[in-house]
Amino acid sequence: MTPAAPTPAYRRLSVEERRSQLLDAALGLFAHRAPEDVSLDDVAEAAGVSRPLVYRYFPGGKQQLYEAALRSAAEELRLCFDEPHEGPLRPRLSRALDRYLTFVDQHDAGFSALLQGGSVVETSRTTAMVDGVRRAAAVHIMRHLGVGDPGPRLRMTVRTWITAVEAASLIWLDEDKQPPFGELRDWLVEQFVAVLSVTAARDPQTASVVAALASADG
Amino acid sequence: MTPAAPTPAYRRLSVEERRSQLLDAALGLFAHRAPEDVSLDDVAEAAGVSRPLVYRYFPGGKQQLYEAALRSAAEELRLCFDEPHEGPLRPRLSRALDRYLTFVDQHDAGFSALLQGGSVVETSRTTAMVDGVRRAAAVHIMRHLGVGDPGPRLRMTVRTWITAVEAASLIWLDEDKQPPFGELRDWLVEQFVAVLSVTAARDPQTASVVAALASADG
Image 1: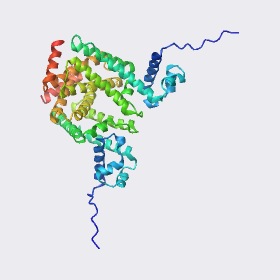
Image 2: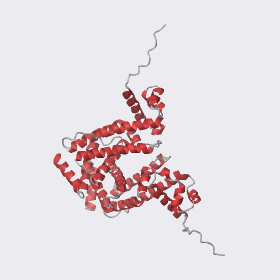
Image 3: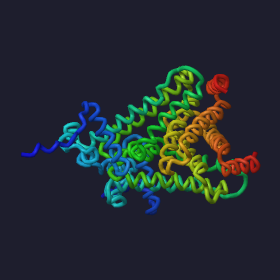
Image 4: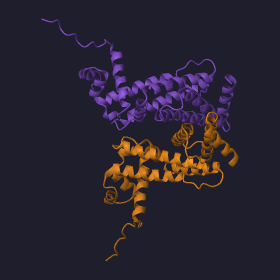
């Protein structure tokens, strides 16, 4: 009698670790295919686990998988702007963008797929999740700017810049990550200061934010 | 015998006029409802015409109606940036933006509905149409800037600004069209010059565009 062949050595993972492993596998697949073309079987294969295991974690099928992946990405993106309210403003913004772009860099085309959604059934719910990330970013930025009650001009400036960051990230992925990471980050920070300065010329509230930015870091 | 009651006095329209009347009615409905909740019957009612007439123009049902409305809007938006290549650059850009914002102003929430799509079945085709408008705008702008072969930094600047214009338009509608039309237009032109100037600091090609902008209009 020969000794029993070793069973495949699955690493023992906690429920949360397993879930996040499966979501990572799904995000990797979203990078190359539209969300509606990614099946739970594909996720099982990509993660190297059994199909029943994936079905146990996502009994609601691919729509549930897609929403879970989007929610997990949204959660991570929200944390990017959660930066201590200490020290000069510009480096704070730079650190937040650094985290955001690291997420974009790591998730690559999966980031595009998530943001653009594809034609999954429940678009309104997923759109709301993506909008939630944008709103959270705007709230964080207003807090960093020390503004409690932003007027329409400052609000529009910040929200427009957030969309610009998102667009620049998508273009960056599309352009084989050119220009380099650090340049993109610095460029986006400088853009923010530039558009704030444009708004400052016609809005006293934004003018004081720009003055604070100039005095606090220089 | 009394004389026959007059039949309802439909204005006689050409095929093209009728089609565009129906599309206008549809766009008006998209302003308040998701595209998938607008039926051909609703369009008939809104346009004050018979149901069979609408069905004759859009035998493919609401998906065809939505795509036709989007295509017509896309065509109109493309024309906005079709501006003679004469005279100073800044006023040209200002005139193009004036036409774009007039479209946004007139179509109101229908503009948002069209851009955001909703969960109509054929998302990829409609997304491609919206992307086509953005690409056409970028091509027009590069021609106005006199740049035949834009590098990645200039390309990213222009594409990012186009998204910013779109985002600002959506926010503007969301904020009850504040700030006023003319201020929004001028602000967006100034933003463009500001972000180009930021890029110019690290890109010689953009630097010459900014120099031309400064010398041509001032």
